[in-house]
Image (cartoon, rainbow, N blue to C red; front, side):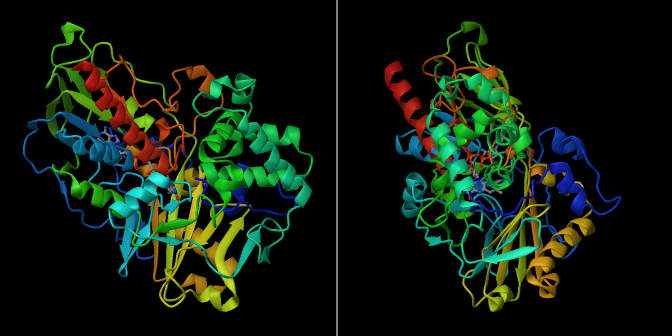
Length: 543
Ligand SMILES: Cc1cc2nc3c(=O)[nH]c(=O)nc-3n(C[C@H](O)[C@H](O)[C@H](O)COP(=O)(O)OP(=O)(O)OC[C@H]3O[C@@H](n4cnc5c(N)ncnc54)[C@H](O)[C@@H]3O)c2cc1C
């Protein structure tokens, strides 16, 4: 996520292990080897485990609000149905594809594993407010999302919060009216320029074509920063940037991926800016509304709670990949649908678990394992009391678990809402803590920055995206170093939404399949629209 201002001053180099030790309560942690390792059985088999809770009021977990235009499975046996196109996944990519295909006259059935639409957009509903638990910020260049927002009657509102920011980078909290702290200007300017220069040499449609792509791919961002910059401010800036933008540890991310991400998203300056940048606006009333309204506008209700496990050919012996209508069977525990075309609009990890039994159809490479991890927290107060002290509510910290806090209050007269992000290795450890330990860890940090009043929230809500196996990789998939060049072309983010034989019948979408704005809402929408465009073009050729 390029969703926060880069920040950080001082000579502190923050390593994952060190930062974790600093805030871990004794004997509270249950480190794991990854989300699946500590999830109960069902999660490992693709059934989502709800891990959204109000840890301010123990025992009252909750999720998204009611959704119209969708259908949940009952206790009935798997349903037989037909469609021209089945879209797997009701995130923005799948819904964007379905919207275009339906407008072109196709009978479209969207199927979704979760009990809600929206995928990585979702909201808590509390005190009459919807709070973005997933993707929410919309940049000035995110024109397709803006167009859809307008088309579906949604309003975007600026994210700016007035007041001074806090930077807690080793020597205690420091106030600053600037969005960036008093870094050494030369060191930071040099680091940002170097990143943008290098990113300009990485074509997002083909990162492997960059000069020394293999070397950059193997080199971790942490190792690159150590090699290139003597000044601690430059190293710290890079560390903060990667944790904020990619929700990952720079020691686990390859340089080629970082540069690809920057090139895809519009460069480091744009990606890290609020006003005029990638965090310019958010949806009034929550980003989840976009998916809900798109789903509600479809002719056929989205089938919820319907994970797809298999794609079968009805006539596998024929070898004909441009299959006739009704030639593919979409199979899951809750459904069987016959169709002619499929759009797979799910992230690479879950997509890799769908069995393809279609002759001639290859699965395009995608980073099925990710180093990204996020827990997003909302801490709700009766009023934004930090404004009394002239604070904006924004914090950047050099140690976990809470490294970034922003103010999502709707103005200064109502409830106060602080949003915290726990990312990368911090999130993996945090997710293994007891509920009481998670609550204490969060409130301790907030009280450190905002005073004792921070210990008295009305509610403390969390959404642990690690516990959502069908939307894993949050904010977006972050491959391990070396993955890009090992996977080889066709690049998953090559802007080509299709794979397999020309003409389909399977078309791939999702923000991780988009060379433009990879990992963003905009990338998801573009990928879905592109998949639909290619599918329709293939149909025209096949006639
Ligand atoms: C905490 C957080 C903050 C973020 N902040 C921002 C932000 O501020 N701005 C921004 O632009 N982006 C942000 N992002 C990223 C953004 O949300 C995503 O890039 C985007 O929503 C991805 O959309 P998608 O349709 O590609 O995938 P998804 O939203 O993941 O949708 C895929 C859908 O497929 C379903 N699925 C998976 N497997 C199956 C199966 N086998 N059968 C049926 N269904 C299946 C999933 O359940 C899911 O609903 C954020 C993400 C997170 C998690």
